Length: 166
Image 1 (cartoon, rainbow, N blue to C red):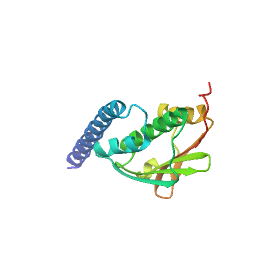
Image 2 (image 1 turned 120 degrees about the horizontal axis):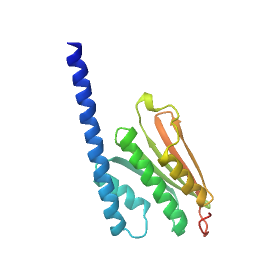
Image 3 (image 1 turned 60 degrees about the vertical axis):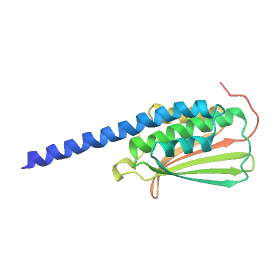
Image 4 (image 1 turned 45 degrees about the vertical axis):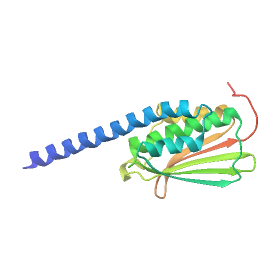
């Protein structure tokens, strides 16, 4: 009897894992298509692309949206792409994306509910390191961690014309 319960749990884990893997593969395919559709990396276009992949993404834009310098736009795109992939990997496929244009900076925030076991601070692997590097290359900062309702990624990127730092 207990063996049957464990087999059911293992089967459900495999099923959920396959579902998430399928969703990640679809998201990767749509990201590739979006790069052709939106050759100039576009944050709103990326959110739309993720919605097409089945993510439940709400978008909120505050402040006066304006054209971003290419390095800032590229860094924001990479950070947003990685954060939304993590929504699938570690969350339940729902997220809120907030783009805040405040003065001479862009605040890019991704918030998503996660199971309690994922709310503790995680070890920084490739994705978090990549997001930090993208923010740092344009003179910005990145903060990640648990918040009241789940997990949050907050990138603060300066809006100014500048070359990527090395």
